[in-house]
Length: 579
Image 1 (tube, rainbow, N blue to C red):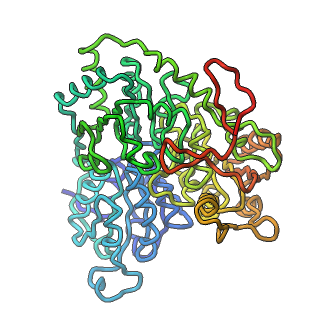
Image 2 (cartoon, rainbow, N blue to C red; image 1 turned 180 degrees about the vertical axis):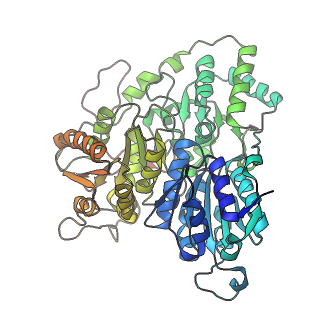
Image 3 (spheres, rainbow, N blue to C red; image 1 turned 45 degrees about the horizontal axis):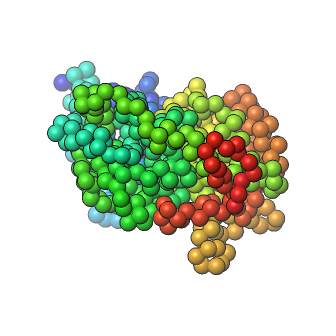
């Protein structure tokens, strides 16, 4: 067996696992790995401006490709800066490996420079965290890390490498090494048959698509099952695009924030929910007594401990989503001929149309809803959208129309401000021939805006559309209605606040400000053209009406509409909305 520097063996493993990009910051404690990376012909390294940005970029690349994202940092504060990125990936079931350099083994207990127990710090937000103390273990740890990150419910893994461990040699032959097999559990067929029986007996069943269906690349099988049994589909927010927004069985979104009126109505009328690959997040369910009353639940998930975590299902099935859907479809075909839609099912498309929210405002300042109307109309079905957390995320879930899986990326459970810019970098590298559009808030943009310099340096073009109301608006709204105050949420000064166009230009990127509705489309045209021509990001900063609120509620039957809505009888034309 040939001997080689252990970090060269690590790079060979990264290459064989399909890694094409790594995002990191070199430092003294990780330089042996960087030395090996410098020799790789297959892996490109991007030097980020903040380790959190590196983890989010790796996260974005993983979401867009389905492969494992890689972020690298040195010891101490680099590792602690990665915690938010690890948490985000873990919460959203994204396969991610963060590699940190560490002080040599003999000084770990001596308060050495930048020596911190990062392994224990990140353990609660990872599937596994390693402190590797023997050079000979390193190749096996990396192989296991890739397996753990992808197997079962995907998630984040951390590997901490002391400097002296990195400097060692191992006996390693890349020609006879390969990735470890990844086990995917199939379903219990008796339970699958019971599930179909329950669906056939129900009067108003619905199918709920969770983000796990997209992660399993099983949206096609999901839609086939829905079409065969003629059952309406409600995707969770993390599954937006899993079924086309204009599909006749698409009912809308359920929730107390990222929600559509038709989705909540159809869900409340249902008597059975078959849900696959979701976690029943509280922003989705709202008050559980309302959410669960009057309907039964079948919950299918690859992670056994997800079943019953929020409420006990009537039938729980542990399975990979794709294998479960294949089994459900096969069993349905054995048990019943293709079903015809009931009048309730046939009403779904018209219900979506009649229960919309007004978007075509001509106001100045611009109403935020108008921005999403322009996005829906300007960008084609192949556009990839990226968004993070704030009122703009809620409006996005309420108004944007997405047609394909892995074409809408959001951070669901962790909700870290600043996620969009680095995520756009990773996603664009994964999808170089597609248009990537990040929808951002002004405050979120400011969190990791330095990563724009990374995109400029490495010629990664994408478009940012900023909804700028000068507020921490997701906090301003509950302050207003629950606490009758407006405190600590205004980020304007000198009449406007940060000039984001100048910030973009200062880093070598592009920017344009919009203040009138009829300027939005020309600005989008400019941003797409110039971003792609100059191979750098372009920002369209849209100054919107500051006090606009989003529809929200404490339960899915009590959503408070703060803006005009449609509420029309069947087949009626759409008139001026009511409030």
